[in-house]
Image 1: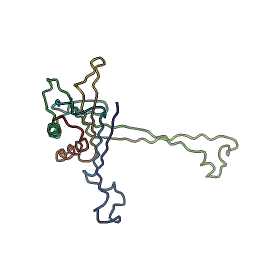
Image 2: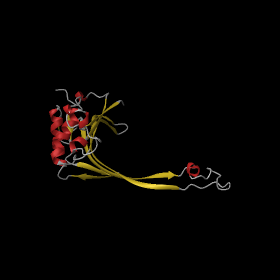
Image 3: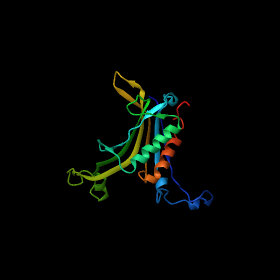
Image 4: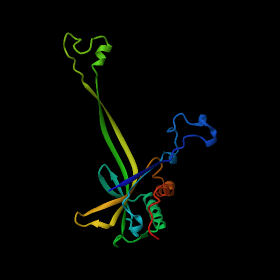
Length: 215
């Protein structure tokens, strides 16, 4: 399957276009507004003609994924997000149908909240013996020194929206597999605020102009 990935980062680097280079921040990643920090990553199957699909089904809840654990989530932000997503797909010519009806596309919405713990190993180098004047390896009367490894631990947390369009029209009945033909990740600050729903859905679909039914 041939895919294409588009990544859009909304970052303001300078204070104004006419302000000149001197008005740029020393570090453009400092003091970003929530909107400036947001990243939109879309990926789609280039062999697919999205105009060949007419209907979609969308569950009334969001799947919350936390370190491979999954549960349904329906807090304050999920319903506006699902409603706005359905409105946008409808505006692109797709018709929403009941989940019990055979639809061309299935829409999956996930709220991912993962945390990982990792470890770094930091071995000492024989160079330090030369640095301290001990002649490198063998500088202690022919004995080779032992270099113990020291470890540091770190934790990485990531939270983002994940939207997928699943091809139900061309399901592989033999292998019982369904193809994901479009996917979007929404990352950054403020993406789980109700006030940002319209903006982030708009930006995702702005960079997915090919996602349109044959009207």
